[in-house]
Amino acid sequence: MGLLDLIRKLKSSQDKELRILLLGLDNAGKTTLLKKLASEDVSHITPTQGFNIKSVVSSGFKLNVWDIGGQRKIRPYWRNYFENTDVLIYVIDSADQKRFEETGLELSELLEEPKLQGVPLLIYANKQDLLQAAQASEIARGLSLDTIRDRKWHIQACSAQSGEGIKEGIDWMSTVVGKKK
Amino acid sequence: MGNCLCKRKREPKRKITLGIFGLDNAGKTTTVKVLAGDPHTETAPTVGFNQEVIGIHQYDITFYDLGGGKKIRDIWQTYFPEIYGVVYVVDSTASDRMDEIKENLQMLLEDEKVSGKPILLLANKQDQETALDEVDIMEQLNLENTVNINRCPCRIETCSAIKGTGRKIDPSIKNGIKWLCGMIDHNWEKFHGRVESDMEEQKKKREAELEARRERVKKLREERERKERE
Ligand SMILES: Nc1nc2c(ncn2[C@@H]2O[C@H](COP(=O)(O)OP(=O)(O)OP(=O)(O)O)[C@@H](O)[C@H]2O)c(=O)[nH]1
Ligand SMILES: Nc1nc2c(ncn2[C@@H]2O[C@H](COP(=O)(O)OP(=O)(O)OP(=O)(O)O)[C@@H](O)[C@H]2O)c(=O)[nH]1
Ligand SMILES: [Mg+2]
Ligand SMILES: [Mg+2]
Image 1: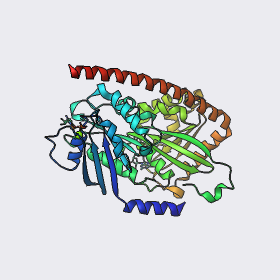
Image 2: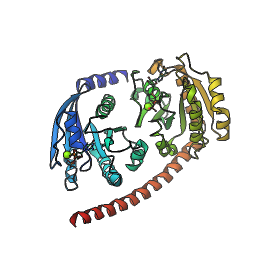
Image 3: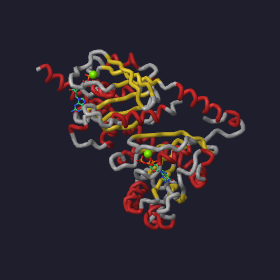
Image 4: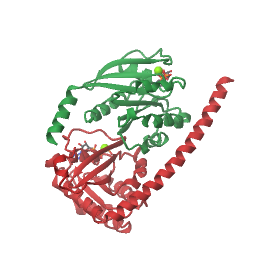
């Protein structure tokens, strides 16, 4: 047991490149978040038709982040990007309570994907600047996060516009992937 | 994780699930970490779900570690049907929060999916000078009464989760877990049967809820798309 653990640790500490999948409904703020993460200007962002990819170094990891458009007609293409995902980031517009159930349903379907089995899930509860901070337990219920048993998950309140909260989410991510089997 | 060589000699490992509860900052995540043998490093508050499967004695224990903060605490209930026993962690230095802890503990043990299950109370952070001792904690939490009313076998251990990890873990924690497993083992048929039937019930409820949700989303979607066309 000791030896195997050691090998695993050595391997994961060398292998610090992570493939991150950024999903969520249209207008959730995925592209804004990605640009903010890369310290780019976020003032002229248009809906994503295909995908964006950026490499960002943060918390000692090289993150290769794939941001896929969330419009309904694009969602069927999400599956083309599932392979080898280390962490799934799911962005929600916390101000759009009307679509909580819809986004929760999309998420449930994602979580059933064999290729995403066991992949840790980070929820960015975005657009916190627009409203009273939504209660984490409400989001957890609305999105049925509390029915998940096969992976770790974490809710991070953030504002992609101001950048607040983004770093904390990445920190959580780096603590869970350090232990990835 | 398990060592394959000794498996042959032993009976199959028993799989049990334990819920680790307590207010924010109690030391739940730290406790799970040192039980798993991970080095003790600074933790961030949990706003979500963390689980570890840890082999202890002849058991494979799945620990459910949830956030204890006010804003996330409400989701604990969803996990109650699945747990065989409770590890409740108390920050023994939080003398100004004993009333809050008392109420939280009462709420937990009164739940019909928890009553009757064994509970290990870890009076944590004993390395701190201001830590209350077990007698004070039992008194201030009205522990005896609460566990008796709810028929929960209970054991209290004073400990410090940051003392050491893995084999160097505070022996009180290890002994406490051993006691908890023993209690469950001793009444295995009863607890196992209860968890199985509660989980079955929960599954049905969940499926019905999901179906209703699908319907609602479909309606909302249709409505929105109609409006977009107009
Ligand atoms: N107030 C506020 N607006 C935000 C925030 N993040 C994003 N937005 C706005 O929300 C809108 C959608 O943002 P995008 O980043 O394009 O959303 P997306 O998830 O990439 O959308 P698709 O590419 O269509 O899937 C834009 O007008 C952003 O300026 C935020 O934190 N606060
Ligand atoms: N002095 C001392 N500090 C401890 C001990 N156990 C945990 N801590 C510290 O207490 C703080 C909270 O610990 P966590 O394990 O994150 O607490 P938690 O119960 O998981 O908190 P939530 O996730 O917010 O519910 C951290 O700074 C720990 O390092 C202990 O035995 N002694
Ligand atoms: Mg986009
Ligand atoms: Mg915690």
